[in-house]
Length: 67
Image (cartoon, rainbow, N blue to C red; front, side, top):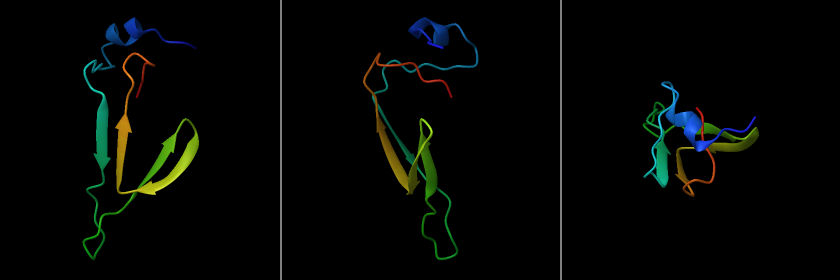
């Protein structure tokens, strides 16, 4: 199934952020020693490992993301 850019704009459950070109996701969970607990990361079915911080960059209009 292919989604057009307009599909997300017409759905109340999907937010679009046209001006966002990068995002950083950081774990806020800590262990007993106070160290950050890494988060398991998966993209398109591929396991990328566990990371305490992930930085995503986006090429505008390359694809529509649905979460």
